Length: 182
Length: 182
DNA sequence: GTCTATACACCGATAGAC
DNA sequence: GTCTATCGGTGTATAGAC
Image (cartoon, protein in one colour):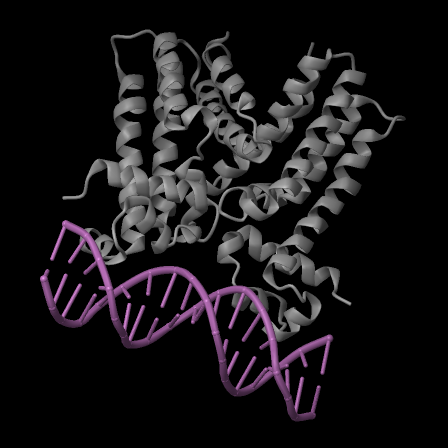
């Protein structure tokens, strides 16, 4: 059975080099497994590796971001603060790219578009529901939820482009307030 | 001499497929030139093609976005509205990706990082100066300028991921107001 | 389940005719 | 300045021993 650690190592390569740049040689080096061993675990090859890595990320987000947002017992502010904390963890304080953004730019989008679209929609819709519960009207809630995801994605681009994670940190720090302000 | 139209065709391929996905076969098909003809115009090959395409974009932005923002005769609001208009044109109403974002994700970042960083910094700093002229303090101006670029980049990711350009349009429409509000 | 060795396609790049 | 033909290298993927 393939270890969780291995999947994380594979994920790291895709986030760093993109789908096309994540060659089997690099995936092999990162995991310490030979190419043939990778094919033993992922018989359909590189595309399957990327699919597994994408599903792993989606599962992590479902458990750590989506599920907490859906908790009916907690206050909106508390849940959003929890989300920013987990987002900070997911992207290593802005130092690592989003696998969704990496795969959506580049030709890998042709293969993974549906999964990526679903993941983004789920995140946005779940967050919008929290804002509706908090008293915002539907339209405002949806706009602000989209803005939140969009700002996270944009700040990750800037973090990589400017070698500066401060915009990412600022976005995360301001999110709870700006999402809920009347 | 290589035509401007050719450079635009090459640029389109990089924005659609990324650096690694922009194969010489695709670049050849998009331009109608054989591979050997591409090497006649760009002796150092694919890396030079990408560099030329990146410089072309930087020149276009300098003329159409940076220069108007630096115009001392115009009001801040007017210049920012002009910027959003040109940004809308640059990204075809949100339908085309940003070449800076495409190259910064993926391993092409190793080659083009300095140019990309400079281009982003120039855009942010020029916009920040407009906001300072308009009466904002330095720190607020810089933060808002970073926010603007970050929102544009994020909305382009969302546009591609969701097959929906509305977040991009909304960001552009709201920018003049949100940048200048007191 | 891991390895070495290798097949085969495609990539970037070049030679040389026109 | 464009083409056809082709090279060497690398990418994905497989065969088969251990």
